[in-house]
Amino acid sequence: MNASSRTHIAVAGASGRMGHALIEAVHASDACQLVGALDRADSPALGQDAGGAIGWASGVAVTADLAAGLAQAQCLIDFTRPEATLMHLNFCHERGIAMVIGTTGFTDAQKSALQSAARDIPIVLAPNMSVGVNVTFKLIEMAARALATGYDIEIIEAHHRHKVDAPSGTALKMGEVIASALGRNLKDCAVYERHGVTGERDPSAIGFSSIRGGDIVGDHTVLFAGTGERIEITHKSGSRAGYAQGALRAAAFLAQRKSGFFDMFDVLGLRSTASA
Image (cartoon, rainbow, N blue to C red; front, side, top):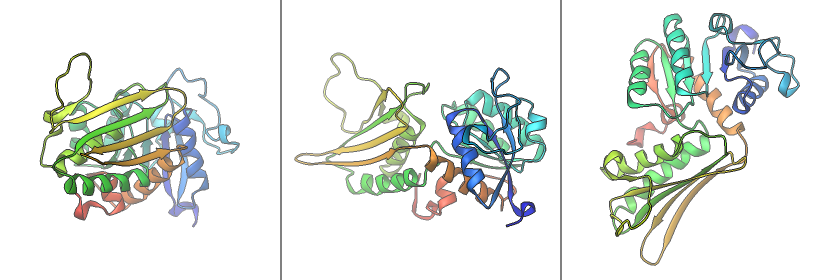
């Protein structure tokens, strides 16, 4: 594939571990070309070659200047934090640049801002871009429907010590998938904390537990606990490569679209039988 037919990708958070994984994935892809690398204004990586951390001379310098970093971009892949993503959103919206967003921790109002911008530009928003995780979402949807009565549901997630939000966006998405399959609203049945004398468990509750420690990339388990048996559906990430590959698939999906608000079920063709 020649350079002109490749999707021109810019990466936000270029000096972070996820940024490195994304840059490495773009470098290995025949369908994408790295044209921009963004980072915060106080990043020590500013001015350095974006591929330096993976031993690649990309010819793209890390910058905090949105105009420079996005000058040639057709799609921005953003795994940063809500405030930074919304700043990037405003710029991309003005210039018609597609966005693949893996940032988590958005408020309802911030999600509404993303949905509003998607009337004019194409956006994929997903708390987890991994293909395996999204297949896991599908499996737990099926399990929730089959185990709708007589089973208590708990979601356990574990991440590295640097993660700032809890529960993880992936865990919350799991809860949303399960609640939708059961005809419930997650806001009405989620239990995020237990301490002291809590009383008996509400059978309609969906419980969440969060673990933070070390360098855990991301582990998620949904437990369906019945009488005399337990069913556990687990996904474990050993590296960020799966997230990066999924993000590139999302970028390729958006290359064919002018606008719209999508998630990884749309990208992977799981939407037809999904209710979440």
